[in-house]
Image 1: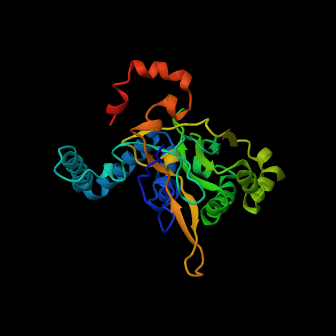
Image 2 (image 1 turned 90 degrees about the vertical axis):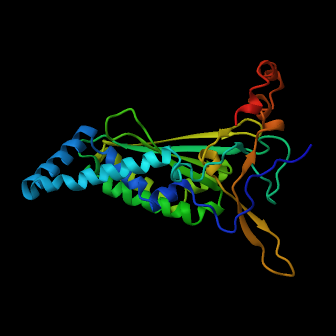
Image 3 (image 1 turned 30 degrees about the vertical axis):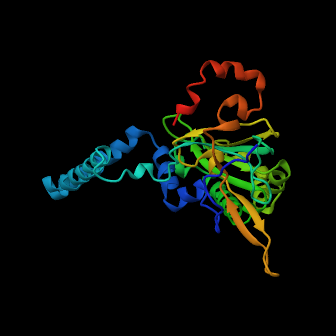
Length: 302
C-alpha cells in the first residue's frame, strides 16, 4: 500500500502558529477588547463620540464615517463580484485534506492515526462588570504572558505541536476564552505543567488569588487519543485545529555537518484511499456498510 501524500514539503523555519498570528496581527487584542463590553455599550460609546465631534466640527464630522463605510462597501463588493482578489481565501487549501502524524524521520505511513496525540483545552473567564479593568486580571495576564512566551520559544521542541485561541458566545460580554493545544504525548504536557512558567502562575493562584478574585475562573480538560482512535477531515479550509500543528524533524547532516532541523505541517491529501471516509480513517470495517450506501458522495465533496 502506498504512503500518504503530504500537501506541503518540509519548512526550514517553523510555520507560524495561529495564536502567534493572532498576536502579530493584533486580532487577539481587538477580539478580546470587543468582548469586554456588550454591543449596545460599544454603540453607545460610538454615539457619544460622534455627538461630541458634531458639536465641535459640525456636519463635517460625519465625513470620516461616510468615507469609511463607502470604502468598506466598495472593497467587499469588488471581492464578492470577482473584480479584486478575495483576500479572505488567502491560505485556504482548496481540496479535501486531513492530518496524519509523521514518523520521526519525516516520512508518512499508509495506515491512518499511526500514533497517539494529546489534546489539551485550557481557558479562563472574567465574571466581572469591569471586564478588562477587573481586579486581579492584570496579575493573571502577567503570568499568562510568561507562559505564552515559553510555549512559543522552546516548548515547540519539547512536545507542543501547536495551539490556537477560541472565544465563547454564550454571554453578551466577558465570554470564556479557550486555548486548544496539541501535544505529542502526556509526558510532554506534564513536563510543561511542572515547568517554571506554569508553576509560577499556579503558585500565585494557590497563594490566595483564587479566593481573593473569585470572579476569575480557569479550567482545563485533557484528552489522550491512542493510536487508531482519532480522525479528521477538512474541506476547502485554512489550516486550523490539528491542521495548524507542526512537527520538528532532524535530518542527518552530510559530510560531518550538524543535523538539520526542519518542520512538517502534517497536512495530507485525503480524497482517495484509506482517508476517503470516516470508517476508513477510524479503521472501523464494521461501519463501512453505511458508507457504501452513499458511495457516490465521498469523491465529490471537493
